[in-house]
Amino acid sequence: MSSKATVHNTMRIYHRYLGFFLAGIMAVYALSGIVLIFRDTNFLKQTKQVQQQLQPGLTADALGKAIRSRDLKIESINGDVQTFKNGTYNNATGAVSYTTKTLPKMVEKLTHLHKASTKDPLFYLNIFFGVSLLFFVISSFWMFMPKTSIFKKGLYFTLAGVVLTIVLLLL
Image (cartoon, rainbow, N blue to C red):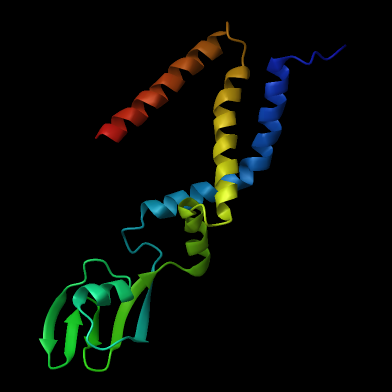
């Protein structure tokens, strides 16, 4: 029995082995993506007390930038001590004390997968992964012969996936 090297068979083989190779990466991306969904909650976050020495006499905007707190608002002033949500700042000495919530180190590294920029070495993994997923989309249409009912049903499911995504984007 001879094996024909058709585009159909070649795509199936590439799809299969690339799928096995990327299974681990997809599992990690899936877990980190689920964690990212809860980024605006305290899910898995740990409270951390931070004490820093900053320049004295900072404005609320400058203080917010220094401690990476957007829209920082001073709630009260008692002498030189200014109180803001989750902390205090001594305007005379520059001492700041506040609490913050952070993810554990390993979870933070996992979520960084989705946030990598072009300045980050993970950028190359993200590009490779994205191109591989695009290949999966294209090569999946070679899994079944076009005239079969499974292929035709697959096209309906593909269309349903596209429509659902567009509807959810528009909501």
